[in-house]
Length: 372
Image (cartoon, rainbow, N blue to C red; front, top):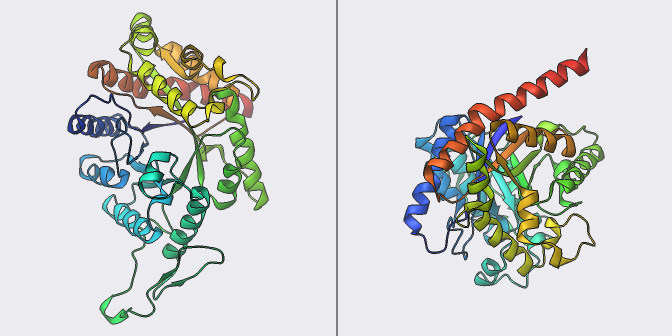
């Protein structure tokens, strides 16, 4: 099982923007030093707590300060820009990173972003689907372009103005061939979008604020999509994000991860809960579809979505998660605000250097036992 990193990022609304950007960069640099496989960075335009407005720009600032970690948009919100812009910018970032780029995509869920861009009444899921189709065609085709897909609003052409002998009219292709890995974040139980991911060889990342009892529905749908195109789903392609805090002792783990009023984990889920309630998407935090909204309290969420403890405790909880969800290729560690920088860094260190080796030793022993 690989270890990845994801951050929205979410900070206190009163915090200095420049300082939080520095901390977000330092977190990814630390993840690289600790051997994390990848780092997914979110983006929003109109959220005072989530202040990365362009994930590609942020990731570009990290290329020269990291060595092995794969830099991932988490996600590029495809309804918000013309696909020519996104295809060209992603291709450039892939070259800057020399292939250490993962293209994480989504429609863009924040309604206030959509309103600010004049898209509130648009079908943003459809815009997303149309945009990704055009991006893939741009990367696949050679100039001059004449992309006019049936039913697709985005028309891309350089036929009238191209000058091949001058290199004019040519859109860039990515460093990776034929394209970077494409990852989609999945939130809803039984998401039909995961079926399409399987059909198109995109890889799912299950969100960290989805209750674990719904995770098997993501794998079932991904496998269904793979089967529809005559392929077998590979668990290594499935990422599962979780909210995790590891400490050297149980008292610190419980205090910082759960009970302290200043806990960044409490602050995170207090805000996520309020946002999901406002957008009428509390279903992701329900244990059953008919559970009443009033039952989804902050205690309910914290009890079910935060993995905290010492190394041994967290190892046990991750193995239990794998038993419940089924095999998956990567656990994605969710980054929090730096209320206590030392505890933040120590948790990441323990996760990388202590928890994951023990988790993988148990998985390997189980594989050898099954093969015997």
